[in-house]
Image 1 (tube, rainbow, N blue to C red):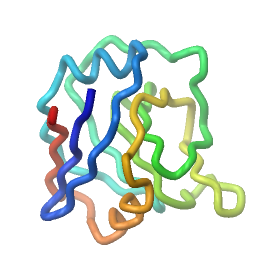
Image 2: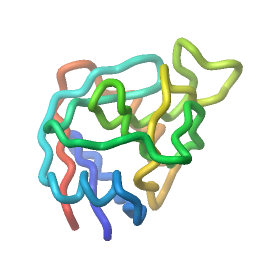
Image 3: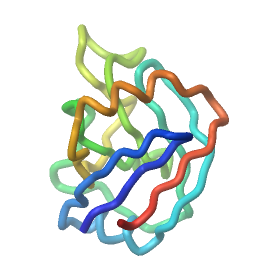
Image 4: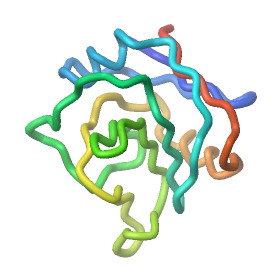
Length: 125
């Protein structure tokens, strides 16, 4: 299944993984929220869903991997170092589930232009 993440005139197409997190987030679409920034990461709260940490939950992500931050009930999209990163890694503050992949990972670096409070949408394609 494919989704798109839309902020202003930027649309990032992603493929949803076939895991519990991906299925539950898909079921809650469309999502509309306001973003928060933290280093080179944006995150935004989603409607309360019961998502448990996946067996492969992790803190360090690769560019293009879309995370569900369990502790914050939020989608987190890292595109570079955060305040807790070691070097250039994309590190979240705590464990998160990998639930989707950007079709073009380099597009995520364009997220740096957006500021706290801007609108974001996650839509089924």
